[in-house]
Length: 110
Image (cartoon, rainbow, N blue to C red; front, top):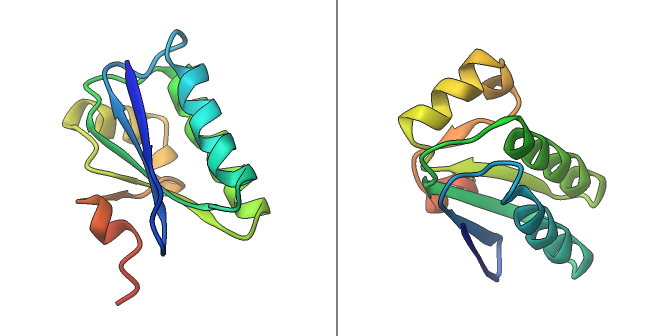
């Protein structure tokens, strides 16, 4: 899995490319933690290139959400694939991690 981060003025983006599983979750956790520690607590996680997520991946997203909110920010997901949305729905985490159609819409305050 490739994980990239992009800093922005209003929010930062973590892009994941590949399966978000126990093997790749630590890299995503580190990317999110590094952003929060550097004062970038408004984070959009772009899951458009993530075909699969397991419980470890879900844990990273929930942990990141908690950390971001503790830092007066937020973590939102965007562009989730059908398979990822299905896992979120089956675990009822779609109530906590709302999926936005795009990264740009995740923090659109209109």
